[in-house]
Length: 495
Image (cartoon, rainbow, N blue to C red; front, side):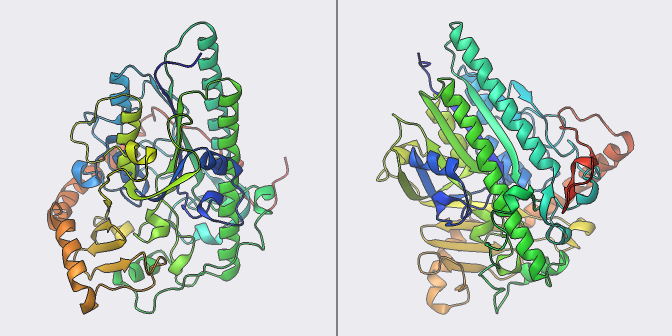
C-alpha cells in the first residue's frame, strides 16, 4: 500500500553542468538513469543556481532565499541556525527529513532541519582549516590550475564517498520498506547528496576509457573583447595557457564522472522501485551549479555564463506530473525548495523568495514569472581575490541576461538569438533600453557597496574563527573520513 501522503527522494549532485547529460542533448555521455527519470517526468531547460559557488548556492536552496537575503556569500560563510529551511518546513508538516551525505554547510550546525544524517561532508566543518588529506590529489578539488594538469584516469576519495552514499541511501530505503511491511505507512523524505562530478577531474579508468579521444577541445574560444573580471580570473587562477593534452584529459574525466554519478543514481532508484517504494514518490534531481570545462578559457564555476550558472533539473512523479515533457520557464534552486515543500503539503517558508512551480510542472501553460537572479560576491581575502573584490549579480528575464559587476562594465546577452553568449550587447546603443530596464530591476533590492562593507566586516570575524579552528582543531560533528592512499592518478599503486 502506498503512503497516503507523498514521499520525496531528492538527489543533489555537485558541479554538474546541465549540458552534460543525454536528456539535455549530449550525444556522447552515457546517462541512462537520468534519461529514464527525464522520460518519466518533466525536464526544466532553464534552471539556474542562486550562486555559482557551492555553499551560497546550497544554503539558498535550503531556505528559498537569495544569498543577499542571508549574507551567505562565500564557501566559509555560516547559515544561521535560526533560518527556516525546507527540511524544517517538511518536519513541521509531519515528515522526518533524513540526509544522506553531502550538505556542505559550514559551522556547528550540520543538520539545518534534518532529523538524522548518515555520512558527513568530505570537507571540514570550519573554514580556515587546510585540507591535505588527498595524497597526490591535494588541491585538485579546488579552483587551481593543478586540477586541470593533474587529471585523467585514477581514483579520488570523492568516488569512494559517493559509493558509500549510494549504499547508505539504499540501506535507508530498505529500512523504510521493512517498517512499511510492519504496518508503518508514514511518508519518507530522503535527501541524497553526491560529490560527483566535482573535481578532481579524475575518473576510474573504465569510466575514463569511455570518453578518452572522444571528447574534444572546448568549442567556445576566449572572447576577442574580454571582460576585465574574467580576464583577471584566468590570470589569477593561472589558466591562461593550459596545455591541450591536459584539457582533453580533464574533460574526458569529467564526462566519466558524470557517467559514474548516473550509475550510482540508478542503483538508488532501482532499489527504491524494487522495494515497492516508488508509488507516490516525487523524485527531484538537480545540482548546486555547473562547470565551464574550459569553455572561453574558463574552468570550474564562478561566472554567470550558462555553463557555470545553469543546472539540470528533473522532476519525476508518475500519476501527478506529466511524463516526457519539457519546460522552458526560467526557474531557480530557491524555487525548487518552495516546490518540494508545496508538493509534500508543507506551509510556505517564511520570508521565502522562491516560488513553487508545481503548477508549471503540471501544465506548461501555467502562469509564471519568467525571471530569476543569481549572485556571486567576493571579499578582499588576499590569497583568494588579490584584493579585487567584486559584487556581481545576474538577472535572467525572458530570453535576456544582464550581468552587473560593481565598478566594471556589465554584460548583456540575448539567449534566444545568441545561446552561446558570443555577442555582448551591453555597449550597443540599439539595446540600451533593454539594458536599462533590466538594470533597474537588478538594482531595485541590490546595494553592492553596502554588501561589500558587510562582507569586509564579516571577514574580520571569519578570520578569527579560521584562526581558532587552526589553533584548536575542533572535532567535525559530521565528516567523512578518508586516507591519502585512497587517491591516485594514472596507474593504480601496488597493494
